[in-house]
Length: 440
Image (cartoon, rainbow, N blue to C red; front, side, top):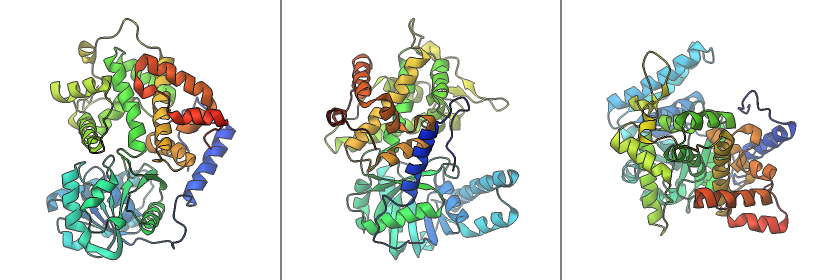
């Protein structure tokens, strides 16, 4: 595989060798329990045929598995198959697929509203809307059809797996398998180990991810896991900069200049601002059950304004931070500055870029400190393949190493004094500085 980076920002030989080594460490199973044979998956059930479900069904069928793709009605499930046809047609145009492969894929996928057809699945993946009650409902309805040695997975991006597993008949066979959108293009899959997930289940989930040709990182359970927690820092920082009076143009330009595929406002438009609001609200509920609070920031005002006041929730609705005319390319919403006036002293590109890097690196360190992350390799590779952290920086923790642990801690504290608690350096850095350690 190749790492994506801007043509003007070269990856040094040292960084490239480090990334190749870390990728090899992951793919050869450093996080996979070693006392189980490779478990091949032949039949997969996918609950939900929408944004994520149809993509999961496609990559599974592409890898040679039989797929039962369910939804609440036959018509909706059929629409999921239409989306898969769209992916295939794109592949045919690029000559990445031929007609024989097309027929093989389509013959392996059965769209249906009949859960009985899930009978005998080695793996069932729940990919319905990010709502705990709905996920519980489909879990109870579907898992009885698993093979005796089958496993059940949730594609949730934020709800703790251990909470969802409470609705399962066999919580030891319940695990998180978190894909990224678009599923057929994104190489990373985040596997989330719940409190009661067995090692055998983890091994089987790991093998499935390798079987579909993707890169598995394994993390421990928490609200938002690793990737959602850290990726959210990028989009929230972008919206926070809007609230502080920085122009949308400078926010987006700084993101691209920093080496991200697109700016944070374009990203949140793709995700859907309404979905971001729902995930935020769900995270508040999840954290409250643990006696914790979700940290708020200037981005909350922007999210609430876009969702509740002007109802511009993103690309899917044709209006978000960008306008999406049918006949020409998208462009930034001109009226945004009327509601969030430009400051007399906006930040420079360099200061915006610094905030992008530091906010994500600090949250990564917190994940490592809390044992959500299991390895430095999974942190770095996960950040690059999961949401496009600049490969030329070597990943979130390599960025900290190169900056210098002590200097990073000093600058983080300075940023926290200016912008708030989210930048305050984790205590782990003090321990590392005292011992002369780096992330390795």
